[in-house]
Amino acid sequence: MRGQRRKEKDVQQDIAAERIDVLFGLVLASAEDGDLPQADYLISCAREIGMKTNVRIPQKFKRLYCKHCYQFTGASSRAKTRVNSKDRRVEVTCLSCGRQMHYPLKT
Image 1: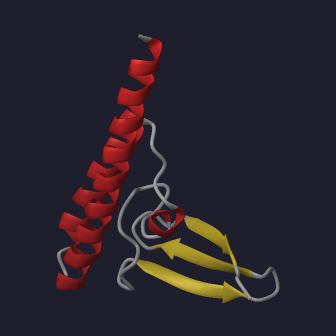
Image 2 (image 1 turned 90 degrees about the vertical axis):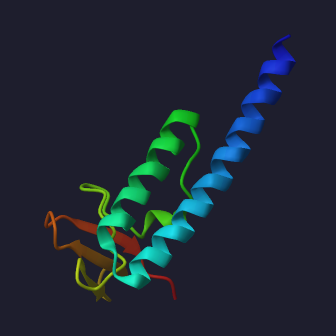
């Protein structure tokens, strides 16, 4: 009985991970079209799926939205990106909430 529940949970998490990938593909497509409110909505849907099923959002997608207000920051109209060579990191400032996110600079 216990093994069956584990298999069901694994299947649910696999499905959730696939849906998150699909949703972030739609996020990028809607952002290219200029529909940023739609991109924000799709990000919130992907986050809800991840939280309900305990599935992490991949790192390549985490950097597409603000960690504080959860708005799409891949567009240059919503974020300011700077390279801090002294601290060897990339600084992304969300223009909606004003918070900064720091990512390591890859060499």
